[in-house]
Image (cartoon, rainbow, N blue to C red; front, side):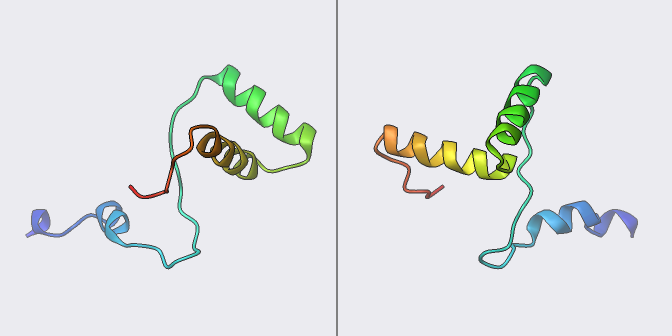
Length: 70
């Protein structure tokens, strides 16, 4: 039956990437925030991903937590 098979989208969500592989992180922000964030990254000569990682590390240090465990 067609309804019994998992959709490719669902199957993709169930698969875990190997350690070190990248995954997509999706969330919505305002257009203004996106333009400012991207412009800041370009101005510093870094990727948006690297800027996000740097900000996350700084936030964890500031709040003295964030073991990374979910």
